[in-house]
Amino acid sequence: MADEANRTAFVELQGRLIETTAKLKQVQHQMRGKEGEKKRAYLTLDELQRLPDATNTYKSIGKLFVLEPKSVMVVEQKQKLEDSEAAITSLQTSKEYLEKQLAEVENNIRELLQQDPGLARQIMSMTVM
Image (tube, rainbow, N blue to C red; front, side, top):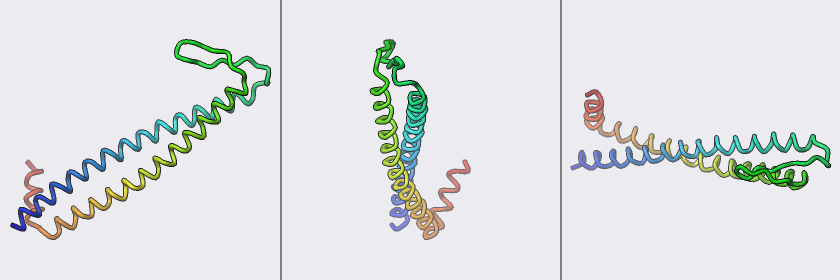
């Protein structure tokens, strides 16, 4: 009876481990995307600030380029930079939370396998095949 309960607990923990790992990878992927957006916004802003104020600047909208004042472009790039930084901060918090959850699940699995060596042997025999 306890053996069956341990097996059920292991399957549940294994599912949580897989789910948490997938969520963590997704958050890391989103962070990389936001880092790229932040870098592009920073570089564009840097280039815009080097230009004289009277310079014609064009904003890309799909395949179309629209004339925009430099000041509008600077404000837009600053906003993109701030938005990216805020998103990265939020994603970092999520990442830390998921990493804690992952460590907790791994510890729970480790404890379960230490409590029930028979279950550990059974799992090892299944993975060898």
